[in-house]
Amino acid sequence: MKVTFIYPSFENLGIEYLSAALKQAGHSTELVFDPRLFDDNILMNAPLAKVFSYKRKVLQRVRDSKPDLVAMSLISPNYLWGIDLAHAIKEIMAVPIVCGGMHISAVPDVAIRNPDIDYLIVGEGELPLVELAAALESGVTEPDIQNLWYKRDGRVVAHEVRPPIQDLDGLPFPDKDMYQRNSSLFKIGYTALSGRGCTSRCTFCHHSFYGKLYDNKGPYLRKRSVANLVEELREAKRRRGVKFIRFYDDNFTYNREWMVEFAQAYSRDVHLPFYCMGNPETITEEVAECLQAAGCYELQVGVQTINDRTRKEILNRRETTPEVIRAITAMKRTKVRIVTDNLIDIPGQDESEVLDLARFYNEHRVDRINIYWTTYFARIGLVDIAKNKGLISDETIQRIEHAPSSRATYIGQAESNKELRKYQLLLAVLLFLPRRWVNLIIDKKLFRFFPRIPPFFVTTLVSSLRSKQKYHFFEKRAMRRYLEYGMRRFLP
Image 1 (cartoon, rainbow, N blue to C red):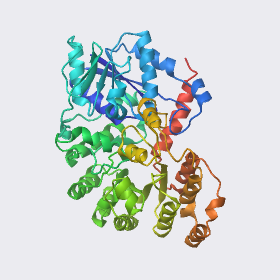
Image 2 (image 1 turned 45 degrees about the vertical axis):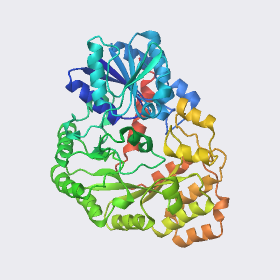
Image 3 (image 1 turned 90 degrees about the vertical axis):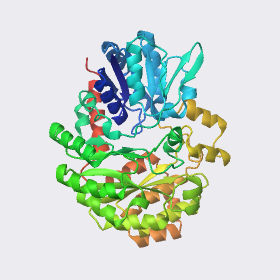
Image 4 (image 1 turned 30 degrees about the vertical axis):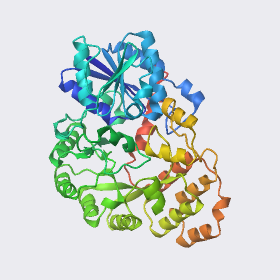
């Protein structure tokens, strides 16, 4: 059976794993990539998006691939893109369409109503997609497959979600060829996962609902063996000439014993610079030393806030401010860059809380401060909290679930409270100023005179000015995508 995947803008590790599983089962796959220029979380411009639209080329490539099944992974920012494309595909060819991904797993009851989507896969997709392909190949269109949703005579058939895959070492390595056949930009760096699940269920994250799918179904947090991970990366280095690695685990550093073993094996057998993410409560001096010994060039740590009440009651996070300080101190003793993620416009957050965050970073300086606006995705825990506080309405929640924007930013306060942009700019620039200047700006409230720069430009400013490391993964890929596909758009 031939399965054609369609995905926009970025590389998707999930699709690569799905493709590898299908190929292992004897099926063939193809990727149709939509660069989606000027309609992503980097640049948004509706007129230019129309001029540089690849929709016709995408539809032609889908038709030329002669698929038996079309598959799409839909997160909130690309949900409307996906259902629009599904409708266009149905107009030109009779082919079943299956959708999975975070948005689908969050609101399958909403997505299944779409007449152009034939099947949904809720949760991990390798096993159900392989089983669906086998069923369709044998002529069974309404199979009894766990994780699968479809409609029968107008009635929704929703099968139970199976336990999460425990033996991650048993999965084939992700199919990187499917992306690299589309463009050499996907040869910039190598993306990988060392495990699945997360140690936390923060209310602003997809794990707050995704983990619930697997309650009472076995461990949600799983880790590959060091040997299996290193084998994949050695192969990538040998076959693809990889120069650096980017791990996408939400918390790469939580298992101390695994980190010790990883540092030894990785430094010996792979020895490439890498990026990863961690949680402050897991960053001890020993873990910091492991990261440096292994060759980590940058660790991104989620801090979000230093307010204890907000951290525990609103965000459902466990770390403490002393643990955040410990993590920063431990990493500053190494040569590994430490970058922190922080949220503003959290429900209930006031000016004093943001200024406390600024004072904190003025005292405990890191290499870069990332500032993000609180974003509401479908059925994350923060949605209920914001609704109970009267910050978002039922109508807004309906939009989040049925028609999220390209940036999925249906933010309650931030749409009207533009004053927060001044605080964002303060957090962005304080690392460039002497400590006494920052204290003066805060104490005298001189930030009131800061310009209200749009969030995108603030983030771009701090990233470009503060980033001294040479592995600009996202920047290089984004620039290449716009240059390459911008020129391709007008070629035959």
